[in-house]
Structures are given as structure tokens and as C-alpha cells.
Length: 92
Image (cartoon, rainbow, N blue to C red; front, top):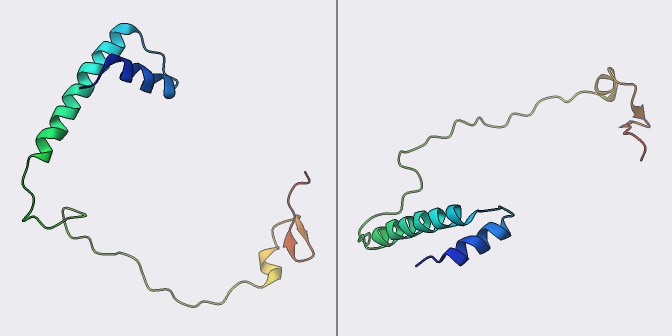
């Protein structure tokens, strides 16, 4: 059973200010949620295969292909922030 103090403690940890009426409402809602989970635990799933996705998903990735890379002239062509073959960042 969820107690109002547990809801208030969770709200305090989450830095949420709850009025007494709100804490009471959430206490009832948490109780309903826990009841639902308890009902789910009663379901016999011993003959059910684990499923990670309800439908089969095919990968849409492509194979990696080796391509020529840019030479350093092309890499730094559109920047003024290059120094000794590296990008320059802002000074700290």
C-alpha cells in the first residue's frame, strides 16, 4: 500500500511542491498503478516466448563502402580557423 508520506518524499526528492490534496490524489493513483502491476504478475507467461518487438523488424542499414577522403586543402577550404593542419577553437 502506498502511503501519502511516500508520495510526499518522492515529490521532495524530485523537487516538486505538492499540496496535501495533490499528494492524496497521487497516492490513490499510485495505488491503482500498483494494483494493475499486481494483476499483470498473476498472468501465466511460462509458455510465452520473450518478444523484444511485436513485429519483425528488418534492418535498413547499408553496407559500409570504402570511399576516397578529402585532402586537407578541401577540408580547410572554407574556414579561417585552421592552424598547423588542425581546426582552431576559441581560446579559453
